[in-house]
Image 1 (spheres, helix red, strand yellow):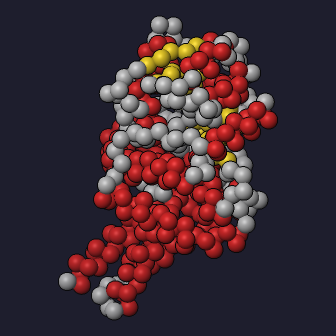
Image 2 (image 1 turned 90 degrees about the vertical axis):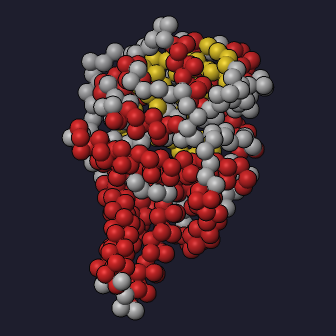
Image 3 (image 1 turned 90 degrees about the horizontal axis):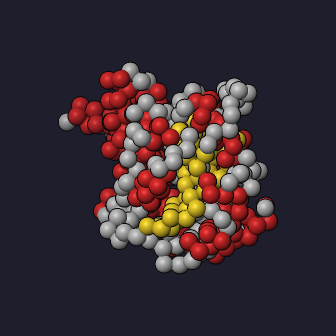
Length: 409
């Protein structure tokens, strides 16, 4: 009996140790400022189309388009897919001179279907590069140029830096959420880039050579269609790259109910993809000897950091009790101690370089409260996981971002 328990605790500790250590490696690698520079001197600006799926985005579509118009020579190269809209999204976009196509299909709802519809429209006169932008984002200066150039030079998918700004008067929990998002979308992708590994796609600010998109299908109601797309492309031999010089900005919803809806879709989708796709990536790395797929699989194997901390804490307490009572050897406890130290080192290094100016160290005292608020989210995944794509409704935070976009422009 003791032998069986010891084996169970050992494998549990190993399953926690591997993502914790890889998470630490990523964050430490992100401390380096070195990035491989591409030779763009002989590159002509490629023919580029910007595809924007939009479902009832009248509140924000105007400011998003204004942040893009100064970056393109021809407004018609921006294609807005007004997807199942019953507001003024299409009319506002047309007033700004961009191309607008409308889609109505109550049976096939989701961003993936809208993107597929837009790509089929572009197929009549295909561009060299397609850039996908969400309808509720501010697109930073020169982002389109940088994404297009890197995609055409590497002939690979390219992911821009995608961050969420905190709303006015943020709470301490808001600050922790913003820091966690920055670790996921900035620190870890930078670390992967420094290690020469591909990154996951994050949903907006994504550039693709036209030929690359012919190898995959976007038409689905996957709740994290961007993550799945990046995995499918990587297995097909098109490894996504991270370009931190290109920047796209959104904002956290201020209403707690909307924020929970957004987190539920992201985190349930991440966990579902983790279970389904990590074995696929590892098998692909083994069979095709594309060892960078192993790195992408390790990246995907890292659960949301709050869940990883919870799993580590529960495992450590249970394992230590079993060890003290003589029911297990010290090896599982030692492995979990290394995992905990890796977690602490990763978070500390990420905060030191990327978060200390915005998140006071005292804020981390509220992490236990932050974790408690996440428990229903993860219990929901076990009891009733979200399987259908649901767009996060817009609130006053979107109006605030709208104003910020106007100020930037």
